[in-house]
Amino acid sequence: MNKRKFVIGWSVAVGAMDALTGILLVLAPATVLKLLGIGQPSADALVYLSWMGVFVGGVGLSYALVVADRHSGQTVWKFTALVRVLVAVFVAWHVVGGSLAPAWATVALTDSVVAVVQMALVRAGWWEEKYR
Image 1: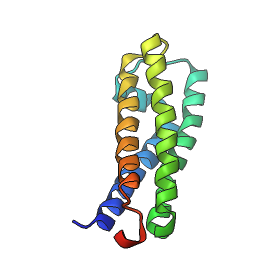
Image 2: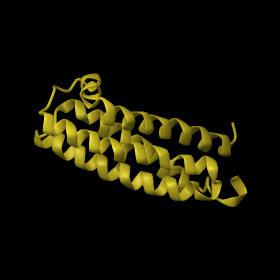
Image 3: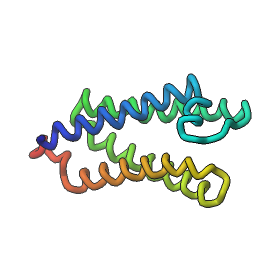
């Protein structure tokens, strides 16, 4: 598999994961929490979780720019890696502090892995002209 096919495949897979998660958070936040093994919060919390779904879905849809315009790919990967690091730190901090259930660590771990892969490949020059 060449580098271009990998970054496109990665972007489609990760983007679809976030886009679908975002849609589910908007339409059925309680179901997402149940899948994560997290208890049902208050109705107010579900509204905020749906609102976060819009953000998560937007991050996922941003990966479409990688497919639509290869020159945007590196920027998308850098930005989404930054967002993922910030989310991972926030979630991990609150899991360790006890204000989020331990099951939320899955979110921090997933975002960390995606961010590390994307940052490593950007630093390795996978978006340079010679690799396109």
